[in-house]
Image (cartoon, rainbow, N blue to C red):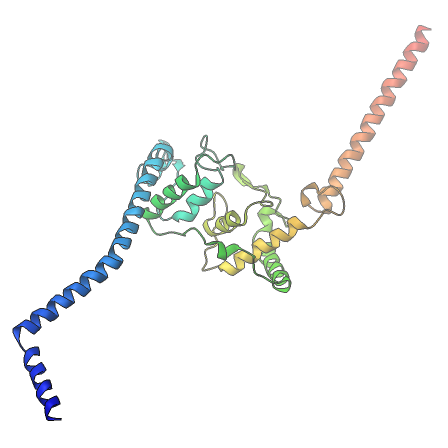
Length: 289
């Protein structure tokens, strides 16, 4: 016991000595340096990678988008005050991914509404421009696949999602897109596009960002789960066959009656013209005879 006390006292004296303090300082520096070496390079590399992506996106934006949207995404107005290209500050990466990923941007010429066409940029170039526009101001980010994917849902959960999505769609979307998602005409030269057979991610981002004449449904007023339910409803429409034969745009009995009326009247008019022409020809032949 006396030996242990003597040893503890000796250790205590050495611990209070100047060499002990220096040793503790060196150990602390080595530990700090080791932790910094383990974690800091990966973070620095990631930051550098983000900066390189933004720089690449700015180059692409300057060449392909700045004419309408301005050198810094501030938007451009014509001499008479009309909007040539809107400001992109705060639209977020999701808007770029939707517009460029569906070929709507860049537009071939300014117009009331951009239409879907062949995609110009690769996925990497689209991601770079999305990163650059996102750096201009906070906005909706590109959604993760788990936000809109229906994978993993049981049949019962899928049916419940379809019912909820149908109620949401019929309340908020049918005025423009028709209850079957076939689209329709809009005022001032706009139109609601057909949203059937559209990829789920683009349907989700359209609701999130509100392209062209469409209002945007942020996650605050339409949750990601509700957006996913709308996608489930649209998928169910695509899976249902047209039992009547021709879908006729899914416009309902009024449109079908109009088609029947026009076709029936057209056939009757054609038949009447044929009878009149045949009768006139017969009378002419009798007179000549």
